[in-house]
Image (cartoon, rainbow, N blue to C red; front, side, top):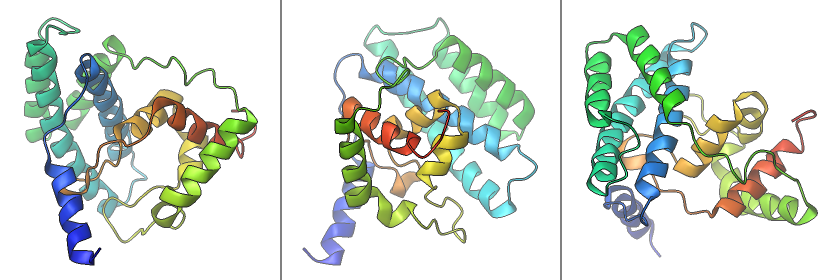
Amino acid sequence: MSIGRILVALVLLATAPPVWASGEHERRLRVEIAVLHGDTRILIDPATPPLRRQGLRQRIRSSLGTLGMLARYAVQEGQQPQPGLRKQVAGLRVLFATKNIRAFALRLGQLKSSLPLDMSGFSPLTATPARLRTGRSIYQSLCIGCHQNPDRTQPNPAPDLFSMAAIMPRDEFVARMLGGIHGVHLTTLQNPFTDEEIASMTAFFDQAQPGR
């Protein structure tokens, strides 16, 4: 397949409307909230470089659009997990658009606390030999090309997954794995892995982190 066709396929995958099973919209909503909360935490960290902040602002803006869509789908399917959810999401978009980042972070943290990600199957996690083999295989065949040596000259570099597993809150790390590649509009791809494959990768990343 030519490079041109590969790029076209990636763009189509990135822009295609999502198709999820019943109940998945609410789960994806919780995933998106957890990732947004983590991105906001990094954004307001004084140690975050300006270029990284620029990329995070772009990504958060894009994710807020996705969050609104997921909230709408959840309500339409009768899965509204919290009264006034769509109004809360709209309020977040206003706060971010008006650059009231502190209030945005506070409101987002409250929403995350009220809609936590279900960590069943991910915590606690047993690192069986089979899981470690599967996690290593997936990482070496599909992840290492971008994540082993992140390009720090980019606003949203592919992060080192071992470092993420070491320092990131577990629910946020799992949310990022479940959510797929979180870039901006044209670099956001849906997660292609099963929960068990993500558990296997998490166990593999953890093996290099004593005490986790």
